[in-house]
Image (tube, rainbow, N blue to C red; front, side, top):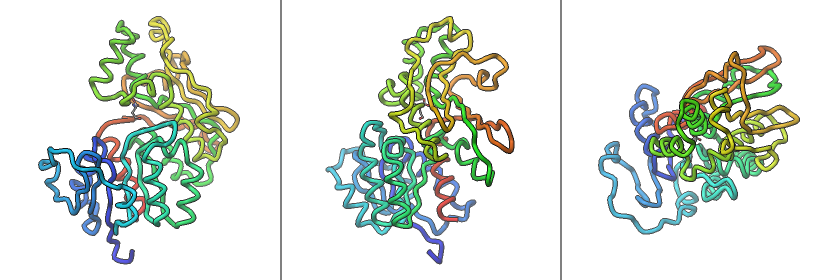
Length: 316
Ligand code: HSE
C-alpha cells in the first residue's frame, strides 16, 4: 500500500495473541507503525472483536460468546495481514491450516507461530502464497523470537552443510532437573506448572515438537525431510545417569538425513552447556564454519517478538 497503512486480523487470542497485542501496542510508536492497526480479533472464547481499543486486555469479555464463522471473517475482512495464533495439531495441521489457506487464497499476508500447518502443509501453503502474491511468515515456529533460520538471510550465498540444535525447552528442562536428582515425572509436572510444556506434553517428551522444528528448517533449506520422514525418539527412556552424563535431546539435519534423539554430548560441545528451557541452534556453513544462536524458545512476549519480526519484514 502506498501510504504504508496496514490492518491486522488476529485469529486466536490466547497467550501468544494477547502477547502480540500488548507488544505491538507498546512498540508501535517507536517503530513508526502509526499507520498499522490491529483492526479485528477472532477467538473461540471472545468471539469477533472489531476495532479493539488499546485497553482491551483489561476489558476482555468474561462470557463465552457464540461461535464465529472464522473462514467467513477471514474472507470478508478488509485486513491485509492475518496473524494466526491458534493451537498446534501435528497430524492434520488443525484449524490453523484452513485459516492460513483461506487468508492466502484471499491475497492476505500471513504471520503464524503455529507449527502444525507449516509442518504438515509447507509446500502447498508456500505455493499458494506465491500464486496470490502474499507473504507467509512463520519465524515463531522455531525458537520463538530468538533468531534461528532467519539469520541465514544475513548471509547471502552461504550454504548450510548441516545444523544441530536443542529446540525444545521442556525436554531440556526435564533432562536438566533429572541430572540434579529429580524424577522424570516431577520434572515434567514442574515444566507444565511453569507453562513451558505444550498442552499435550507428549509432543514435547516424545520428540514431535522438536521434529516439527527440524522439518520446518529442512524445508526452508530445500532439503527433502518431511515430519514423517524424520527419525524421532523422545526422552522417556533416558536414565538419570544418562541425564547426568550430558545427554540432550538433539535435533540434527543435513541434506541426506534428519533425526531427533537423545545424544550424549561431549563436555566441550557448546550445545552441552545449554541449560533449562533455553534453546540453541548451530548451523555449519560453507563460508563461516559453525555459527550459533542461543536464547528463549517459548513464552508470551518471546513468541510475540517473532510475530513482530515477521510483521516488520512484511511491511518494510
Ligand atoms: N513446548 C515447546 C518447548 C514450546 O518446550 O520448547 C515452543 O515450541
